[in-house]
Length: 621
Image (cartoon, rainbow, N blue to C red; front, side, top):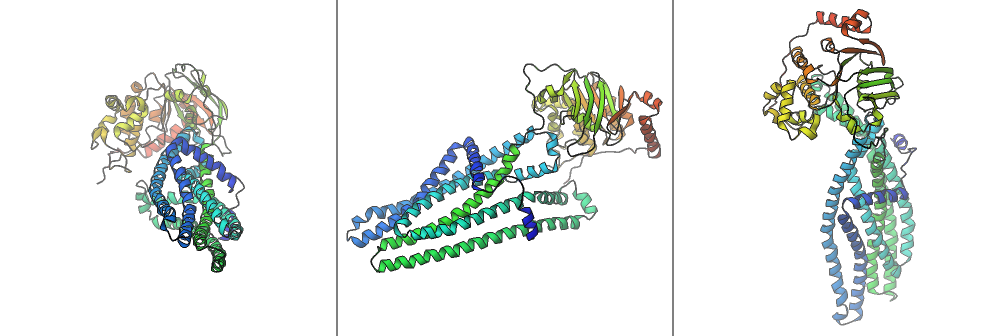
């Protein structure tokens, strides 16, 4: 364990665990908190100042009360100080619930503002960012209680202010009585501070480097409890194996934490013992002075109160600085994420966006995915006329889906240019580009929402408040018959995470088709749009497809040749290159790649003709 621990604590990169990082991140956190809710920040800092002054005032007032009572027979001489002592206690007690209220409210406000900042920034990042495993770790670290760490850092800064004021004022009281104690405790506190700071750094980097393990534990938990995976996990009896892997990961995390906890406890114990020896040695020394008449009884009492509070304040301050540095390092995860810029900078387009009719052109496009050695596309060129239906065909991994992702602006090509009606995509604003495109992806989303909303999301700004338009789209796409069989029709909540009704794969795909056709876009991209549909439903959809897509440029990816044959033209891709193009009959006559795929399809179809499938929605319970 020691070897693994040391390995995890020697990162070669920033941020560093030091006061500079604490100051920099502390200023950033305070600015963010101030911009969110200046009133609550002011309240917390004001309470920190007042409560920082109370202990020294209390100690000084106690000394004056005792000395006044000892040297004067009149109670009136001690009365002002007698009044001040309970008044200080009252102030301290009264401010405690106000501080708790302000802290809770500040935590909620920071939770909201920080979470929104994370989501807003994530929405601006490229798709490539989310497909990088290292960035997935960054996202997990960012999402792991970023708001809590932000609030903890702001709270720690307020506590640092309170402890500092308390330390300085108590220091002044002790210096008046027994100054040697201050020097002795300072000598002990400095190495303790360095020790705790290093321990905070160690703890942070352990957490930083084990985020991959934490993601694995969440993955195994999801497999064991997710409604989509539970049936297969049960049938394969995978639960014991998955739990064993989960247990191994969690035990490693537990053992690392135990090492940190042990080091922190031992350091605190050592400092507490040595500090106690110094404090009580001074107590006996001062008591001797009092017996010899060299110190007043009030000074002895004040010293006992002050030095106990001072020692606790020093310990608290050191621990607080170490905790603040740890919180600061955790906040660095957030600042690092927010400073991550998209690879592609959206152009600033002045004036009215150009009208789009749907002409698409790919000029010598090459592309490779981040981290990949091989090109997914290599020198692909073709054009599609406005209103034309073009099918993309080829074996798996040929580059078909990559082409449509590039068309959607989800990636930028490594080389070449993509044009829409002669306008380069890179010169168009993302909003205008996406308003002209509508997609059904192979991995389409299954939204936990009503059936009505699942269609409306295709053009939510226009459709969410127009139920009649949604129902018309459902009728035109054939989804209305399926929706009519749902328990609450269009208002049925779909998905098992928050409701009780789910759909078959084909029914979800039918909704995805309706969602794509709901968008009044000039270019329609269908990536395996009927892969989960039975033959009858597929025929019903495509019998009306030309009417639904009339006037729209359509790019169609499919392995079903019954679907592909409906295209005006077929483009054949292989290993990232465009190898053939033409109509179905022309490509069959050529006897090339397309003809070979078609012949294989026919042989499989004749050997295993598709069975009629009846797909119904599932309503558990």
